[in-house]
Length: 333
Image 1 (cartoon, helix red, strand yellow):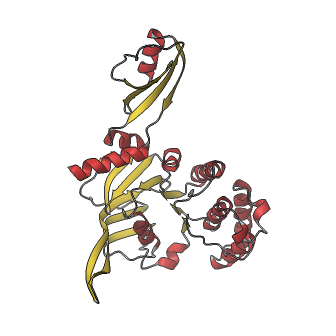
Image 2 (cartoon, one colour):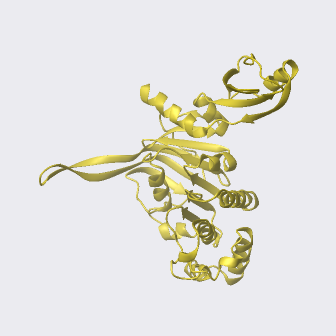
Image 3 (cartoon, helix red, strand yellow):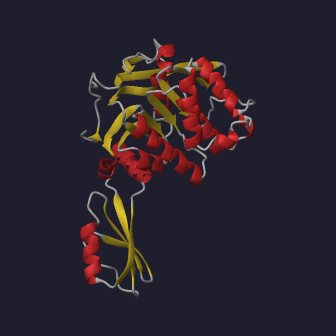
């Protein structure tokens, strides 16, 4: 897929497992203009949005607060009805056949839970077993597998309200997967989790996608989620898709830089190795910035040959800063 800035949403491919074709969502809100007076105005949360996601893809869907990410997910699950355009998930119109679609999708909202607050975790799973009418054998097999992979065995008899945020998040992910959904929507799945819990959730999602080919659409503010899970990223701003492509291409679009941290045997003048430039020096340690689109290998070889090198490391650019720069460039354009 060719990545880059998108300005006018084209018609998505008909064979897209998730197909969004010039979809719009307009909310009507009232704004107070004076004492006992207000005016009605339109807020366009999603504007002529088009994209496709193939079966088995893991796609990051990112943007600032209010960009339209959650509104998109709610339309894809049938919670909201589009104001215009057309969308399909596995050939199903979500707003028209929400019950049928529910059998084929799983949803995890990081700040809300689908579990029953006062019941032990296992009771929530038993209720979902009945709600989704999962065959007994399939339910037991899936539950055993999810409990093992997400390390939930010691938590099954604990009331949900007593679980930590990380434990509850793992519990929610298991709940969303009990019925073998073909599509998994994740909205901030690692929010508030510690480093260990984040690592466990990411490892599980990678394994799920590799083993079962589950299609995943991930929205998050933790851009390490995107870096570690998704080869494709879509960026939305003011309801419109402004970038769709490879993660590496996002760095190029934002004109980002990688950092080479060099430890020398002794303190020396700033290293000269164009196109890299020294941005910081502390004793024998120097930080060099160079374009993220370039390989680090020639730069490393040159420094190793010309300077008394002890150690070095390459730091990837901060994607959040890349996106911020991209937004700034679009605003000033």
